Image (cartoon, rainbow, N blue to C red):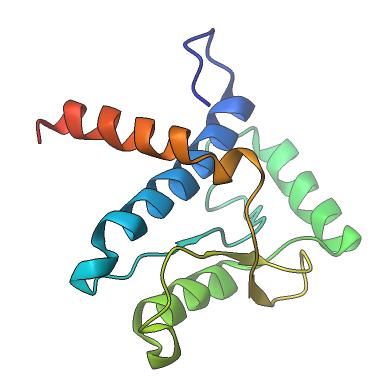
Length: 139
């Protein structure tokens, strides 16, 4: 998890995904008795040069977008947004909580739930992140 070392953009991105999973799992445990459901999700690789990659070198961003498409691993902004909307309002997920969703297989425009990494399933880390977050926001 976040180790306090020198800033590394790649590690920071990965840590943010891990923290999303850890925090959601803990929230699901804490709020399940109250009927509150929470799930985490990753829309997959969306290398749109006008989106997430807009602050990157544009030659790199455009090339990476093309290569990702040719390799068949990229998703579209529309797909990512559609997944988020589905998770927010689809009645089939009303009673589902504590799950992790992402694109599977990558680049095939399909959303699936599966177990996160072993690190993402670490209950002690889930509780630790929750406690640190609560302290940061003063609750």
